[in-house]
Image (cartoon, rainbow, N blue to C red; front, side, top):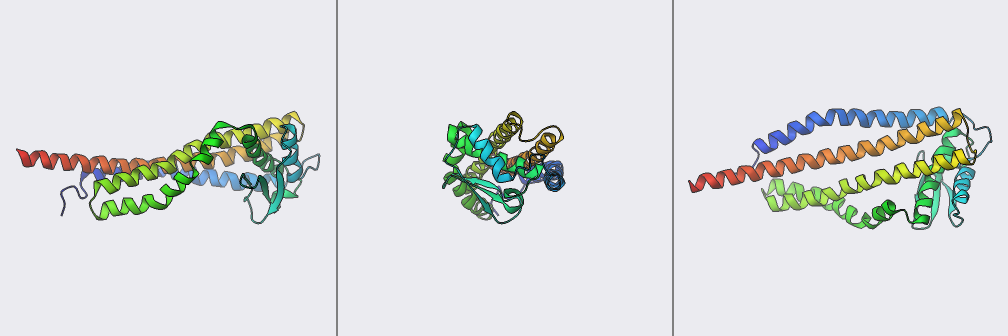
Length: 248
């Protein structure tokens, strides 16, 4: 068996991973529960102006001087997104034609992404630029990491770590993009009086809960990356120790 297989590096990495995984998993589950709970709660609360999600998205676009974005309906729940490839905001059926507080908040957030592209917001341009590299890392990193473990190859394992780190970096860049889209949405909602009082507070709760899911995703990815790095460093140290002992 090669000299750097297993050992203290793996033991340390796995134990640190398990220790930190528990709070991260709790945060992730709590964030998902918050998203689901707040969306359901405020999907039962109609806004006083009877604005639909589509109308709210359009209002945010117009308020920011954006006029060339299409707004359409799509299937599913919480499948709302802005697609820069065809410059279209796609809103789920529970958002597009609904006149609820949750619908306005979610639709305005997606319009916030469209505004980011229109004004050339730097983080979203960076995120778009690294998508091909991120997709490559996502497809290949696990293969190389597994190959590195099975073939006892530190070189393959290191390349796998580098590729996996692209996914973590993408998650990191996503945070300011999501927070900024929500900030743009809430500012426009308030300035244009789309929602007021408790309605605005409800929309803010929905968007803050959604933002937490991105924080949890980043922490989970960073934790996994830390585990791989500790394994690599532990095996490297073990390898150097064996080589040093061989020379004595």
